[in-house]
Length: 114
Image 1: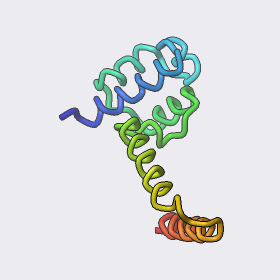
Image 2 (image 1 turned 180 degrees about the horizontal axis):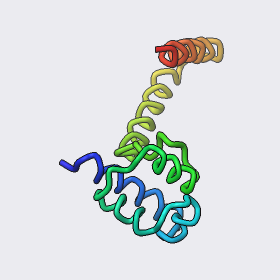
Image 3 (image 1 turned 180 degrees about the vertical axis):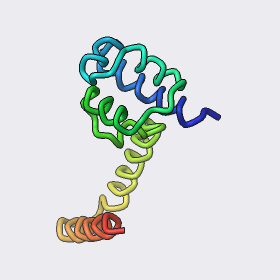
């Protein structure tokens, strides 16, 4: 199992490459040195919170996105969740669907308040 530094570094690299950025590009955007970012991506650094915020800004992502260890699996699970809801409500009329959406809004609000 990868340690947290390796998982975090791999996620930073995944986002950086996905955006077509080089280490030098990200260094300029985040005001961090490219060798420092490289060592973070290799899991060699215990990155500070301040540097993590700089990386998020440089990558133009929300801070939490750097901590999504397996975002592809989460996206797949979310897609399956949506398909299940669509299947189970396919025979509902408009009024019933609005009721379900209202329930979901209430549940999401309650979860946010936890």
